[in-house]
Image (cartoon, rainbow, N blue to C red; front, side, top):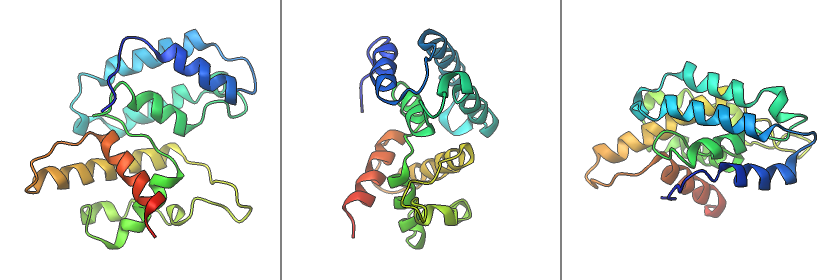
Length: 179
């Protein structure tokens, strides 16, 4: 687990915005909104966070004034949320979605979650070879599946407690290194 020390969000945001930004972003306002969102979510049980709360956070952080012409995408926002609250959020990207799709025929998550494995996740690359856009709905469904995997593990005999971020890293490695 990554230890979160103090307020390092500005450094993180500055580093990545220098790479991705298309227009000027108000980093102070972005950090203020992110901190407000995290304070509202932190006291909640990770299993009890309503989809609408996650959707509102994503909608706010993905507002045009912050994202410009794709400065901050959902993958980066999920990282900003997961870094300080790894029990509540997980990082999403095309690798983990394709990894989850590959697991659909194995019994690694509850049957009721299989309907959330969208056909879109089979290949996150479009016909043009570019990555398909990951939507807020994809992220909400992804969190449900990762929470379902965590629940299955905790109900098993191992007795280990994994954070959602631990599970997203394992899914990433599974997709990247499995054949």
